[in-house]
Length: 225
Image 1 (cartoon, rainbow, N blue to C red):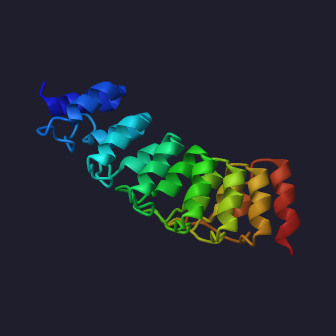
Image 2 (tube, one colour):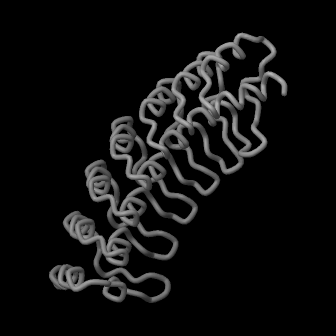
Image 3 (cartoon, one colour):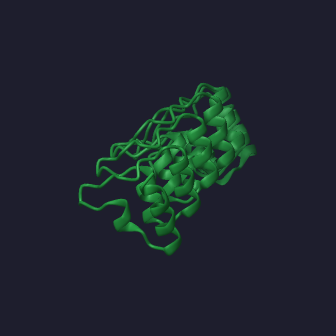
């Protein structure tokens, strides 16, 4: 195994001592692509939460925006797995928080899906585009709604997320809150002006996807206002 492949393995395992020694060799390729994921050592170390290795690679000039086969970069992986200290380190080194994967999912959507409230707040503080949409025209607010994260829903709304954005199926965030029976989120979205009278491309209204008596009561309470 050559030294660059050893660096890839060190990035995965978290062997900072080995990585440090390998990085002193002028012949090591810090952008070596792993066979399994098509990822650089930086992306692999960020994914696994190995802060010291990420720091050393960045100091050696590793490409902070290098991507794997699915279009994920290091900050997306760090955000996905909740490695806040690495997220901050990467942004300090110029990582673009508004880039998307091959499907257009941004770091904000990824951290939202996983429920990492601290990372979501950090991205908002940095001025992330809260209304950016993926290829299906879904945004972070819809993601937070589907996965049932009311505190993140509130953070996004307070940061300017549009409660009435629709995806390619003409569904807004409130449609998903009702369909997935997230009562607290549904009430919050209604308070922020979400449209109760949407119908998706299958012809389903919000009333058609109600699952519980509590949700039915909430929807009926506001439908005639």
